[in-house]
Length: 305
Image (cartoon, rainbow, N blue to C red; front, side, top):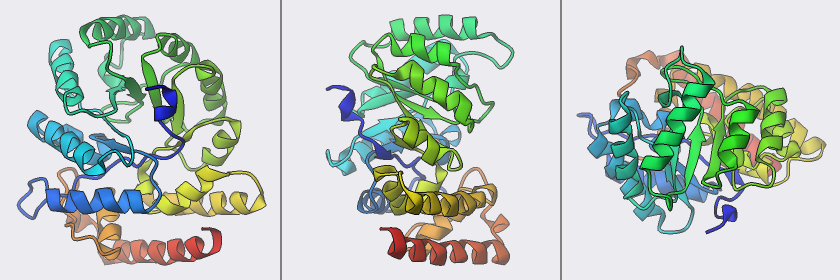
């Protein structure tokens, strides 16, 4: 499959629904996959930070990825990460296990390839070692995950990685249009495509050639992001971008509890249980803010979609 196997548009960073006793809720996950697809997703990013992957066992990460790939049933491509260990050997085994689920690409977490105090040269050397340990037919990508620390890739690092031909996806979290501009130059003409996670820079990055959006707010306003990605030009899309940017401030609330509450309000039968946050932190005022977001989203949908 060529690079066009990874289409432009919205790639939600998927949530992990849990039962009241804390297990993965596969019935709820099935509903969630259908909601993403019905709301215009071009692909699905399973097993990422929004999936609470650092709190999932390897068996859970693999089971989650396999379920999403099977549930999507070829309607949209599915990518997954899931290497959370510190040791090189454990990471290689984790990545091979995720790849064996049949996902369309395996995504490398940039902060797993070197410690925070180690140089980009160490990072590149570790990447080369990891690439040698993974089968060459596995399509790969990168995710600049903010946890446990954020390791951004430079344009030069991206140029070298894209030059291998093995990378197809970059989930960019730099939130800086200047850096994004240089990264887009670095991936030009290669298989690698840039998906921006930041709403404030999204529209400008799309106009510069970014392929799509892969961020938190696709768990609430997926349809609106799909619309913006379809054609970001013109004053109407500037208006939509402005509104989405202000709405995205809700990311700073109690995420992912708030996103699960939002989806409950949309009719999904999922709980607000998470392994990363106490759901009680979403108090009555916070809930009312999520409900307001729902009303704003519906008005924006009627106006722009």
